[in-house]
Image (tube, rainbow, N blue to C red; front, top):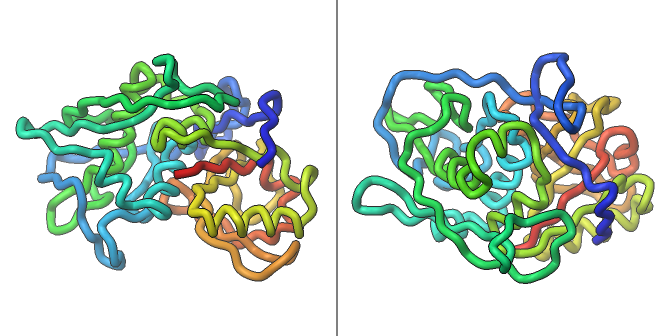
Length: 277
Protein backbone atom coordinates (compact mmCIF):
# COMPACT_ATOMS: atom_id res chain seq x y z
CA UNK A 1 0.00 0.00 0.00
CA UNK A 2 1.16 3.50 -0.72
CA UNK A 3 2.37 5.45 2.27
CA UNK A 4 2.46 9.15 1.55
CA UNK A 5 2.63 10.95 4.88
CA UNK A 6 2.70 14.47 3.45
CA UNK A 7 -0.56 13.81 1.66
CA UNK A 8 -2.38 11.84 4.35
CA UNK A 9 -5.84 13.28 4.76
CA UNK A 10 -7.28 14.34 8.10
CA UNK A 11 -11.01 13.60 8.05
CA UNK A 12 -14.08 14.90 9.86
CA UNK A 13 -16.12 15.99 11.43
CA UNK A 14 -18.72 15.50 8.74
CA UNK A 15 -21.32 18.18 9.44
CA UNK A 16 -24.69 18.26 7.72
CA UNK A 17 -24.67 22.04 7.58
CA UNK A 18 -23.05 24.09 4.84
CA UNK A 19 -20.53 25.57 7.27
CA UNK A 20 -16.90 24.80 6.68
CA UNK A 21 -14.40 25.21 9.45
CA UNK A 22 -11.58 23.55 11.33
CA UNK A 23 -8.17 22.21 10.36
CA UNK A 24 -9.41 20.11 7.45
CA UNK A 25 -11.66 22.80 5.99
CA UNK A 26 -14.44 20.31 5.22
CA UNK A 27 -16.34 18.92 8.14
CA UNK A 28 -19.58 17.05 8.27
CA UNK A 29 -21.14 15.75 11.49
CA UNK A 30 -24.74 14.71 11.96
CA UNK A 31 -26.44 16.61 14.82
CA UNK A 32 -27.35 14.25 17.60
CA UNK A 33 -30.31 14.15 19.92
CA UNK A 34 -30.56 12.91 23.46
CA UNK A 35 -33.37 11.10 25.15
CA UNK A 36 -34.47 9.83 28.52
CA UNK A 37 -32.65 7.15 30.44
CA UNK A 38 -33.35 3.56 29.35
CA UNK A 39 -32.06 0.17 30.39
CA UNK A 40 -28.84 -0.80 28.61
CA UNK A 41 -27.05 -3.88 27.35
CA UNK A 42 -23.68 -4.14 25.64
CA UNK A 43 -24.97 -6.26 22.76
CA UNK A 44 -28.41 -6.70 21.19
CA UNK A 45 -29.61 -8.30 17.99
CA UNK A 46 -31.90 -5.71 16.45
CA UNK A 47 -34.76 -6.36 14.02
CA UNK A 48 -33.28 -7.10 10.60
CA UNK A 49 -29.89 -8.12 11.99
CA UNK A 50 -28.62 -11.68 12.11
CA UNK A 51 -25.76 -10.90 14.52
CA UNK A 52 -25.42 -8.74 17.61
CA UNK A 53 -22.38 -6.76 16.38
CA UNK A 54 -22.98 -5.03 13.07
CA UNK A 55 -22.22 -1.72 11.31
CA UNK A 56 -25.98 -1.23 11.48
CA UNK A 57 -25.45 -0.54 15.18
CA UNK A 58 -23.59 2.70 14.39
CA UNK A 59 -25.18 6.13 14.07
CA UNK A 60 -22.66 8.98 14.19
CA UNK A 61 -24.34 11.96 15.76
CA UNK A 62 -23.08 15.36 16.95
CA UNK A 63 -19.38 14.54 17.31
CA UNK A 64 -17.15 15.01 14.27
CA UNK A 65 -15.65 11.53 14.50
CA UNK A 66 -16.62 9.89 11.23
CA UNK A 67 -13.00 8.72 11.00
CA UNK A 68 -13.46 6.72 14.22
CA UNK A 69 -17.03 5.49 13.76
CA UNK A 70 -16.25 4.19 10.27
CA UNK A 71 -13.13 2.44 11.59
CA UNK A 72 -15.20 0.83 14.35
CA UNK A 73 -17.75 -0.22 11.74
CA UNK A 74 -15.07 -1.86 9.61
CA UNK A 75 -13.84 -3.78 12.66
CA UNK A 76 -17.41 -4.90 13.31
CA UNK A 77 -17.73 -6.14 9.71
CA UNK A 78 -14.38 -7.90 9.42
CA UNK A 79 -13.52 -9.04 12.95
CA UNK A 80 -16.61 -8.80 15.15
CA UNK A 81 -15.15 -11.13 17.78
CA UNK A 82 -12.36 -8.62 18.41
CA UNK A 83 -14.96 -6.23 19.81
CA UNK A 84 -16.18 -8.72 22.41
CA UNK A 85 -12.54 -9.49 23.21
CA UNK A 86 -11.59 -5.84 23.71
CA UNK A 87 -14.47 -5.04 26.10
CA UNK A 88 -14.39 -6.64 29.57
CA UNK A 89 -17.39 -6.09 31.83
CA UNK A 90 -16.44 -5.28 35.41
CA UNK A 91 -18.37 -6.25 38.54
CA UNK A 92 -19.06 -2.59 39.38
CA UNK A 93 -20.91 -1.99 36.11
CA UNK A 94 -18.03 -0.35 34.25
CA UNK A 95 -16.14 -1.75 31.26
CA UNK A 96 -12.43 -2.10 30.69
CA UNK A 97 -11.55 -1.58 27.03
CA UNK A 98 -8.21 -2.69 25.55
CA UNK A 99 -6.73 -0.31 22.99
CA UNK A 100 -3.23 0.32 21.66
CA UNK A 101 -0.54 2.97 21.62
CA UNK A 102 3.02 3.08 20.33
CA UNK A 103 5.55 0.98 22.25
CA UNK A 104 7.04 4.20 23.65
CA UNK A 105 3.71 5.11 25.26
CA UNK A 106 2.94 7.81 22.69
CA UNK A 107 -0.30 7.94 20.77
CA UNK A 108 -0.03 6.49 17.24
CA UNK A 109 1.08 9.01 14.63
CA UNK A 110 0.85 8.94 10.82
CA UNK A 111 3.58 6.82 9.30
CA UNK A 112 4.51 4.93 12.49
CA UNK A 113 5.66 1.40 11.64
CA UNK A 114 7.03 0.20 14.98
CA UNK A 115 5.57 -2.00 17.67
CA UNK A 116 2.42 -1.26 19.66
CA UNK A 117 1.51 -2.05 23.24
CA UNK A 118 -1.88 -2.72 24.80
CA UNK A 119 -3.37 -0.19 27.21
CA UNK A 120 -6.73 -0.17 28.96
CA UNK A 121 -9.37 2.46 29.56
CA UNK A 122 -12.16 2.10 32.12
CA UNK A 123 -15.51 3.42 30.85
CA UNK A 124 -18.16 4.32 33.43
CA UNK A 125 -21.09 4.43 30.97
CA UNK A 126 -21.63 8.16 31.28
CA UNK A 127 -21.58 9.24 27.64
CA UNK A 128 -21.36 12.59 25.91
CA UNK A 129 -24.74 13.99 24.86
CA UNK A 130 -23.55 13.96 21.21
CA UNK A 131 -21.96 10.52 21.27
CA UNK A 132 -22.63 7.79 18.73
CA UNK A 133 -26.20 6.49 19.02
CA UNK A 134 -27.16 9.36 21.33
CA UNK A 135 -30.66 9.71 19.88
CA UNK A 136 -33.27 8.15 22.13
CA UNK A 137 -34.50 5.53 19.65
CA UNK A 138 -31.18 4.43 18.18
CA UNK A 139 -30.17 0.83 18.93
CA UNK A 140 -33.10 0.28 21.28
CA UNK A 141 -34.95 -3.06 21.39
CA UNK A 142 -37.90 -3.47 23.74
CA UNK A 143 -36.79 -0.51 25.81
CA UNK A 144 -33.16 -1.67 26.11
CA UNK A 145 -30.36 0.33 24.46
CA UNK A 146 -27.26 -1.34 23.01
CA UNK A 147 -24.08 0.42 24.16
CA UNK A 148 -21.00 -1.27 22.72
CA UNK A 149 -20.46 1.52 20.12
CA UNK A 150 -20.62 4.22 22.82
CA UNK A 151 -18.27 2.26 25.07
CA UNK A 152 -15.59 1.99 22.37
CA UNK A 153 -16.00 5.61 21.25
CA UNK A 154 -15.65 6.81 24.85
CA UNK A 155 -12.59 4.61 25.45
CA UNK A 156 -10.83 5.99 22.38
CA UNK A 157 -11.69 9.52 23.48
CA UNK A 158 -10.19 8.86 26.92
CA UNK A 159 -7.04 7.38 25.36
CA UNK A 160 -6.60 10.57 23.35
CA UNK A 161 -7.26 12.94 26.26
CA UNK A 162 -11.03 13.49 26.15
CA UNK A 163 -14.02 13.95 23.88
CA UNK A 164 -12.58 17.13 22.35
CA UNK A 165 -9.69 15.08 20.95
CA UNK A 166 -12.03 13.11 18.66
CA UNK A 167 -14.81 15.65 18.14
CA UNK A 168 -13.20 17.61 15.32
CA UNK A 169 -11.85 15.03 12.93
CA UNK A 170 -8.86 12.74 12.72
CA UNK A 171 -6.97 10.16 10.69
CA UNK A 172 -8.91 6.94 9.99
CA UNK A 173 -5.75 4.85 9.80
CA UNK A 174 -4.63 6.10 13.24
CA UNK A 175 -8.02 5.13 14.68
CA UNK A 176 -7.56 1.66 13.17
CA UNK A 177 -4.16 1.36 14.85
CA UNK A 178 -5.58 2.32 18.23
CA UNK A 179 -8.29 -0.33 17.82
CA UNK A 180 -6.08 -3.18 16.56
CA UNK A 181 -2.45 -2.57 17.52
CA UNK A 182 -1.43 -3.14 13.89
CA UNK A 183 0.22 -0.57 11.63
CA UNK A 184 -2.23 0.79 9.07
CA UNK A 185 -1.56 2.34 5.68
CA UNK A 186 -3.32 4.55 3.19
CA UNK A 187 -3.60 5.19 -0.53
CA UNK A 188 -3.74 8.89 -1.26
CA UNK A 189 -5.60 10.01 -4.38
CA UNK A 190 -6.09 6.46 -5.69
CA UNK A 191 -7.51 7.56 -9.04
CA UNK A 192 -4.21 9.30 -9.84
CA UNK A 193 -1.77 6.78 -8.38
CA UNK A 194 -3.32 3.55 -9.67
CA UNK A 195 -5.14 2.32 -12.73
CA UNK A 196 -8.59 0.87 -12.21
CA UNK A 197 -7.22 -2.63 -12.76
CA UNK A 198 -4.43 -2.07 -10.22
CA UNK A 199 -6.86 -0.72 -7.65
CA UNK A 200 -9.22 -3.64 -8.21
CA UNK A 201 -6.35 -6.06 -7.63
CA UNK A 202 -5.23 -4.20 -4.50
CA UNK A 203 -8.72 -4.01 -2.99
CA UNK A 204 -9.40 -7.66 -3.83
CA UNK A 205 -6.25 -8.64 -1.92
CA UNK A 206 -7.29 -6.46 1.02
CA UNK A 207 -10.73 -8.08 1.14
CA UNK A 208 -9.21 -11.55 0.98
CA UNK A 209 -6.86 -10.64 3.84
CA UNK A 210 -9.74 -9.39 6.00
CA UNK A 211 -8.41 -5.83 6.01
CA UNK A 212 -10.46 -2.88 7.17
CA UNK A 213 -11.10 -0.28 4.44
CA UNK A 214 -12.48 3.23 4.69
CA UNK A 215 -13.02 5.62 1.80
CA UNK A 216 -12.57 9.37 2.32
CA UNK A 217 -14.07 12.20 0.30
CA UNK A 218 -12.63 15.57 -0.77
CA UNK A 219 -14.33 18.82 0.17
CA UNK A 220 -16.69 18.80 -2.82
CA UNK A 221 -17.30 15.33 -4.25
CA UNK A 222 -19.01 15.37 -7.60
CA UNK A 223 -21.77 12.83 -7.15
CA UNK A 224 -23.18 9.61 -5.71
CA UNK A 225 -24.79 11.38 -2.74
CA UNK A 226 -21.36 11.66 -1.11
CA UNK A 227 -20.79 14.19 1.69
CA UNK A 228 -17.65 16.32 1.53
CA UNK A 229 -14.81 15.75 3.98
CA UNK A 230 -16.37 12.52 5.21
CA UNK A 231 -15.16 9.00 5.96
CA UNK A 232 -17.20 6.01 4.74
CA UNK A 233 -17.10 2.31 5.51
CA UNK A 234 -16.36 -0.15 2.69
CA UNK A 235 -19.15 -2.72 2.40
CA UNK A 236 -18.15 -4.70 -0.66
CA UNK A 237 -17.10 -4.77 -4.30
CA UNK A 238 -18.74 -6.40 -7.31
CA UNK A 239 -17.53 -6.85 -10.86
CA UNK A 240 -13.93 -6.75 -11.99
CA UNK A 241 -11.27 -4.38 -13.26
CA UNK A 242 -11.93 -0.67 -13.55
CA UNK A 243 -15.65 -1.33 -14.06
CA UNK A 244 -15.97 -2.93 -10.61
CA UNK A 245 -18.26 -1.05 -8.24
CA UNK A 246 -17.80 -0.45 -4.52
CA UNK A 247 -20.59 -0.15 -1.98
CA UNK A 248 -19.96 2.27 0.89
CA UNK A 249 -21.82 2.81 4.16
CA UNK A 250 -22.33 6.18 5.82
CA UNK A 251 -21.48 6.15 9.57
CA UNK A 252 -24.53 8.36 10.11
CA UNK A 253 -26.67 5.28 9.44
CA UNK A 254 -28.60 7.34 6.86
CA UNK A 255 -27.93 9.16 3.57
CA UNK A 256 -26.20 6.21 1.98
CA UNK A 257 -24.17 6.89 -1.18
CA UNK A 258 -24.72 5.20 -4.50
CA UNK A 259 -22.48 2.47 -5.85
CA UNK A 260 -19.27 3.88 -7.35
CA UNK A 261 -17.25 2.40 -10.18
CA UNK A 262 -13.51 2.33 -9.59
CA UNK A 263 -13.18 4.34 -12.80
CA UNK A 264 -15.29 7.09 -11.17
CA UNK A 265 -13.25 7.65 -8.00
CA UNK A 266 -11.57 10.80 -9.35
CA UNK A 267 -13.15 13.81 -7.70
CA UNK A 268 -15.10 11.59 -5.32
CA UNK A 269 -12.61 9.62 -3.22
CA UNK A 270 -9.35 11.26 -2.20
CA UNK A 271 -7.99 8.55 0.09
CA UNK A 272 -8.47 4.89 1.03
CA UNK A 273 -7.35 3.82 4.50
CA UNK A 274 -6.26 0.23 5.09
CA UNK A 275 -6.22 -1.36 8.53
CA UNK A 276 -4.94 -4.81 9.38
CA UNK A 277 -5.84 -7.32 12.06
